[in-house]
Image (cartoon, rainbow, N blue to C red; front, side, top):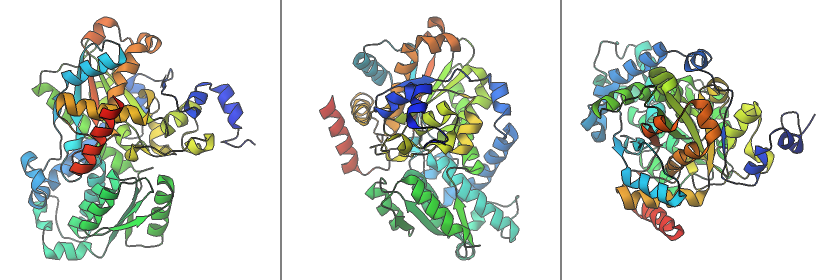
Length: 448
């Protein structure tokens, strides 16, 4: 037996020379030749459109409650959805910096502006807590499916939920959404935070009465500890970012909502007008769920590409080797230390990697400095302020445009690219304290 999933590091590099580039922390990309047509790929996921319908209906049932308890949810009538913005100035800036023309139009999907936690995690994280709360409330007769869930905004309901615990392991944004939502309902909430989690996120959670458990180690240790503690307690519910179908479905609802937004902006997605979505990837739940939702709506006309930090290319390694969660970046001597705290996951989700591998066109890595540059460029050019991890999405169009082999295989001709919609998924940003955000922008400006 070898050192890593049955082989030595040298054997893996010999089999997949690209791994050496990952070990050397070089920015690189890999487009998976094993990707299947949407219909075949979707059949391997083990979840269906009916599951997404069920999740969407549940979120709708909770809307009345969310409006009552979160002022930020008023503007969307309790439906947690984010705006779409065209960013032509950013498109021009990237084209100039990369010295390559990006045909089509670049848009930003601003999950950075989602209510409750200001990140994509307000989709999956909030959804899973609401599903757990609904299950308990129905089981104990607090509500019926026909009731207005605003009924649960009472001292009695909070007293009921306070008998139960909710725990999660997180690098930051998932912890924020789960902690804030759980505490609001009345649960005893615990968030197990890895060493790379930002201080302001810990402070914010504590201000909501959440118990924050800090670790010197990385994400997977925080998850393992959180899981272990919850296992020994029958009143505890653990949100498992590495293996949760509920989280995944909360994210998947984004696909159909996006179709509605595209309609409002007269954005056409068909064979001649491809949609290419660039999704920042940590453990994989968020981008995997969103990609699943997009594929159920747009089929073969959407191409999903994952973005990872050069220091944490766990999903690329997992899918490339076919070993998924059996390999971690640390096995190959990659340190998993990155400014993109939400993406600092050394081991990918087994659930997402194995089920979604045939639906994700490709993967690319981004250096931390490049993330900061993009944070500064977006602030200067389009007056939008985002986290470094979100800024990875803006590198995607460059990788697609300059990879001729992939474009030929995917049928992305020059004519089609000229009509393409490049969608950069902005996963977090608007809850970052002003001073911290200013430091990101200033660091990026220094690097430019």
